[in-house]
Length: 460
Image (cartoon, rainbow, N blue to C red; front, side, top):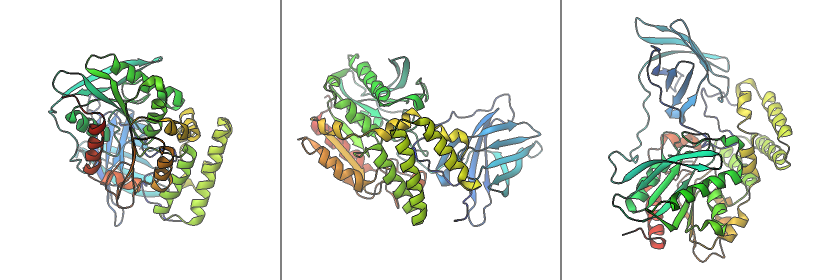
């Protein structure tokens, strides 16, 4: 067995993009609240990290391992004792220490899988790799915080519009899987903020929203199936078409990853009157098939052995079979038993199991986009990265071409060397995402703008 890498980024099978940003902590009455930073002195691999504390909650950031604002648990904060656990990481990592007011430092011991390392935390934030594409204020367009109903919940988001009064075509951005906010913030990047900025500067109105249970949006994502999520998209369409500054006949959908499932699903229903669909790394295969291919590709890049890959794929096949059979209780028990059989350093907290066995994940596993893609007779752009390991190119691009073959205005495009986020990549592994400075490769932004302006010209 390979030696444990301290604070290895865990790749849960549900989705690497499940990274809801946590609220920034601010110092208040608690003298220890706020941001702290230190370095784990691992031989040959010093590991800078940041801890944010606020009473009985907090978060962990480890930029070099693409871990950002990961929630802490069992947080104890007092001058006599500072302690927390880090759920969701292998080896059950913990910290225990105390605050020294004379030096204004927290000193203690970081423990993971039986290994102990001293850790000293000082006031400050851990350096994060630069994100040069992130749009800076002031921005040359209008921006509104908006809310609207979707069934019995409220959706919250941001609508950006060109600066001059007018009636504009609109783009609705559809998040990938997991608890994503309106910027689809992940690993320190904000791809939806960049996409909205690019398209709004071009002359389009752009709506981007928090997913269920994230930010200002109500509901519980784990309890939502694809009818619920498609309903949220339709609610956004109704909201836009109710406004005099939106051209109701020229509203389209731009979906990333799982959003590439929802875009065609909504657009395939004629009553929704969608003008175009753009799929950025949107799967063309079923959720179960994508999950298996994703696990195989990621483990191969991580140089797992053939036996390790076979074991993992066997686990995914059994789990997804139980979910497809509509037996969530057996699926949950199977996951718990599988977890208990792992070496202690690889086990996950039981709370993690709820992220695997739920209605939302079952909906993903059981969805096949073939019928929706075949039904589309509107302009469609589906693009992929050649180094995407989450929606592998070899599985999805050829199938997309086949399913869209009867559409006279469908473009399936491949960007060489780009990963699932459309960043220039070395291996395509999700562990690289946070280290790459580029948020979305410029050639992708240029291609999307050119394709869209030729089919749905912005208002003059």
